[in-house]
Image (tube, rainbow, N blue to C red; front, top):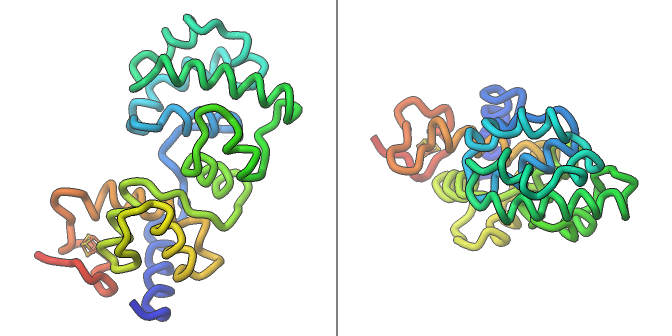
Length: 208
Ligand code: SF4
C-alpha cells in the first residue's frame, strides 16, 4: 500500500471510530490495567461482566491488595484462568504500592515488570492512558494488518514493527483500538464484510 493510501486508510478509520476507545469498561489507569490483565485469553464481554463488582470493592492497588485471594477468585471466577489472574492482581497491586506510590507507571520497563503484564498489556496502557505511540498486537490487529497488506509476518513483534514503520506517527496510538473494532465488527475472522467495508479501497484481500 502506498503511503498516501495508508494516510487515507487512517483518516477513514479515524472517521469510523472517532473515540478510538477500548470496549473494556474502566474509569482510571488502575482499572484499565486490571481489566487488561483480566482480558488475556478472555473476551471483553467476560471481563466487563465481573469488573463492576470488582471495582466496587477494589479500584485502587491498596483496596485490591486487601482483598483475599478467595474473595478475588469468587468475583472473577467466570473469566478464563481466574486463579492465576487473581494471584497476578494481588501481586501487581503489592508492587504498585511498594515501588510506584500506588500509581500505574508510564514506562514499558516498569509495566512489564508487573506480574501478569506482558508487552501487549503494557502497550494498551501506554497508548490509552499515556498517549504514547505504541501498538498492541492481538489476533484482530494481526488479521486486519495482514488482510490490508500492512504486514506479512505471523510473529506479533514483527507485525508491531511493520505497523510502526508504515503508520503516520500521529495515528499510531489509535491503531490497536481501530483494528480491534474493525476486526470485531467488519473484518471478521471467518467471513469479512468486504461489501460494506470502508477500507475496501485500500485492501489487498477483499473478496465478495
Ligand atoms: S475489505 Fe474485507 S478484508 Fe479488507 S479490511 Fe475490509 S473487511 Fe477486511
